[in-house]
Structures are given as C-alpha cells and as structure tokens.
Image 1 (cartoon, helix red, strand yellow):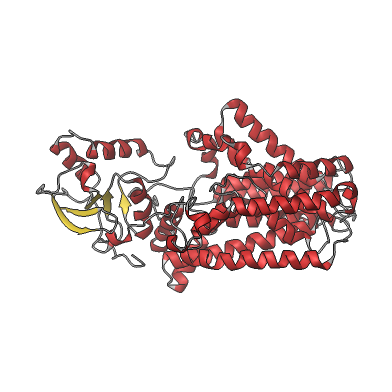
Image 2 (cartoon, one colour; image 1 turned 90 degrees about the vertical axis):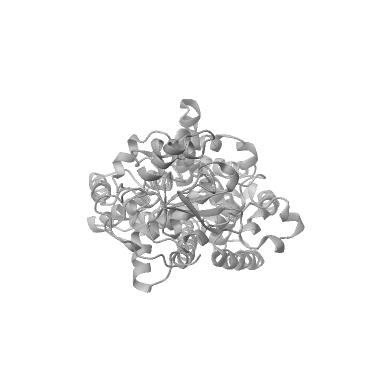
Length: 526
C-alpha cells in the first residue's frame, strides 16, 4: 500500500549445510514418487463423485449444464473457473472425465508446490526453505489423520489432489507471492497489476469458497506487513483490485456467488471439524512457538496476522455454534507450519534454532508415521503393508457397470448414498442428490420420496407414483433394501453387480417429460 522500495521483510540469511538440502530433496522426491500411482489410481472417496459429475455435465453442455447430480435445471457452485477449464480441456482432447481428473491432479499439485515455493521465497532466501515448508504443510498435523477438502495433510491431499481445493490453495499461494512482489516495487506499481490481482482473487473465490476465505486472510497478512505507512495511492490500488474481483464474482454466469452468503444448512455437516482437535492437530503447537518468536521480532509479521485472523474466525465458530467456520482451520494451521519451517533456517531465531531443528525433525517423522494410511490411496488393498492395512481407508466401489445399459442422463432410483454419489460421474442422474445441494429447491422432497420408495410398507401405487414423478428408468439396489419386489411387473432385472447390487429397468415410467430429447449414449470407463 505504499510506493517505498523496501522489501516486505528482510529475508533471513542462509546458514544450513548442504547436507540438509540434500536430505530435503530426497524426502521430496520420495513423496513425488508416491504421488504418481495415486494420480493413476484416482481413489474413489469423499467428493470425487460430484467433481467428476461436474466435469461430465460441462463437457456435454458447456453453457447450460444444469444440476450436476439430479435432472434439474439449477445452478451449482461446483461450476467454477477450474471445472469449466477442465471441461474445455476435455472437449479439446477427447479424454474421458476420469483421465481429465488425473490431469487435474497433476496440475493441481504442480500449482500447489510452485505456489508454496514462490510465497516462501518472499519470506526467506534459503534454498532449503521451500522444500522444508512443503514437508511441514504435509506432515506437521496430528496423530489422527483425516480427509477434508482444503486441508493439506498428506492423507487428505492423497485423496483430494484432483479436487478444486488443491488447485485453489496453490493459486492462493501464487496470489500471496505476487502481491508481496508488487508491494516491493520501487515507487509502487500501476493499477494494471492490482487489477490482475483482483482477477486472480476472484478465480480463487469462485473455485473453492472456503479455501478462498483462508487465503484471503493470508492476503490481509501480507498487506498489513507492507513496509511504510498506508498512502492514498496505495489504498486506491487495493480498491481497484477489490472492485475488479467483486465485479468478476458478480458477473460469473454459472452461479450466484453472493447467494452463498445466505446459505443455511452448513452447520451440521461441519460440526466434526470441532471434534478431536487435539488428536488432529497434535504437532501444530510446535509452529505456535515459531509464530511467537516472529511476533516478538515484528508485530506485523504476515504469518502472525494470517494466524490471528484464522484463530478469531474459528473461535467465533465455536462460540456461536457456526460450525461451518471450522473450514477456516487451515488459516490457523498453515501459517504455523510455515513459521516452523522458517524458524529452523532463520538467524533471527538463534536461541530456538538448534533445539527446534531436532524437535521439528522428530515431529515430521511422527507426522509421516501417523499419516501412513495415505498409502491406501496409492496401493491396492492386497499390496498394503501390514502396519497400514488395519488403518486403511475404505475406498468406494464405483457403479459404472450400471451405466452399460443406460444412456447419458437416465434417472436412477437408489437408496444407497455411495451409489448416488458415483452414478452421476458416469452420466446418470439420481432422484436424490448424493451430496448436500443448497441450490436445489426440492432437495428435501427428493430425499423424502427416495426414503418412502424403499421404506417397508409403502403401498405399491405410491412407489410407482414416485418413479413416474421423476421419470425413473432404472432402479439400483440390494434386494434386501425394500422398494418394489424383484418379481413386480413394473421391473425387469437387467444385471447384477460385483458388490451385490441389482439393476432393474423400470417398465412402467409414465409419460416422458415435456420437451424431452433423446440423450446421447454414455462414453468413458465403466
């Protein structure tokens, strides 16, 4: 916010031996080697279904994709610049959705690593700093690993590499680095660089909203740490960036960004973020010591400001029972992890440096062992070491086989949530969405109708009415889960899956919806 030419903060002078750099490079290469089979395998877990379905809808209709999970012409916040770009790439290359997501995982990881490297370079010139920072971001968590979008633990990232949150986090680090460099320019920068920063911020916010908030706290930290006093010219440049960003958010055609601010129903699904905090963040307090050392030297340190903003937000969520604010926990964790990495290499923390290096090394080893279950997403079950097999995550069995007889856009009735999560990834629709969807006005009714269809004692006429209401063509279920019996004349058994599910064709579907068109056959893997 000033035109002075002084750097944002004087970088620490390097002192560590070359042996440290070689060790860090070896660890980084080992992790990179593990990422290769993970990208190839593309593990089915968590939100993979909705992200694959989003790309699938956009590749079939780039301008009017409709809801990604159910047959409804509603908007969706999943239609972001990132997923639109993936769909354009899919159209241009002819790759199927899952190969596109493999490419997305590679790009997301590259953007993340290069973003961390560029931002850390604004804080330290030591050649080992970026590598150590990446290791801390991956391993300095807790003894109880978990998987959640926007959290960079090794286990979580192994499952989420292809998700928008990984790309958005990397993009946010690039934004922090660019902002720090713009603030250092002699005499200040013109308005064009700030307009570009505003555009980048809008892409970040549209791509993954919670990650956008987390990195916005980092942006505020960089601004607070800017040298000199704020000037009117600097304020105008920041206002320009903000105006450009808000304009892009307002004009984004795929969904209303500002409608998200009034969204209800997020609290229950995010309440687990406030449970077992000690087990999930056991190693993070080590970074708090490093942050305290930085705070003693500089009350406007960017990592300290970033951390405090995150702490206030997460704390407000706990006090106000706004559990969705727990999604900003990375704003507490990431600055602490980065501070821990820099503390080992920083001459300014001379008293802490020696002992801290030993403790940090031990903590990283503990973190690596604690997250050994990341191998679940790299190796098949029978190839897992005995020490991992007992803690392995259960990777889903996708139901692409059920689409062999279906056409793109056919509607399925299923009471199995995992089937509802995976079917749209292959081109089908389900009656009830497998994931919460606050842009879907009849979401509750769809869930109730699905439950009624499979509930014991529901009259046959009511079940048929539900199938007709949503123009269901296929029923996918396990025989013991209720619904119309196997011998009902309205159903015809088509095939049985490897997981015990049975696919039935609905013979009594009623009239097709007005204006219905013949849908293209499904392509891609089964």
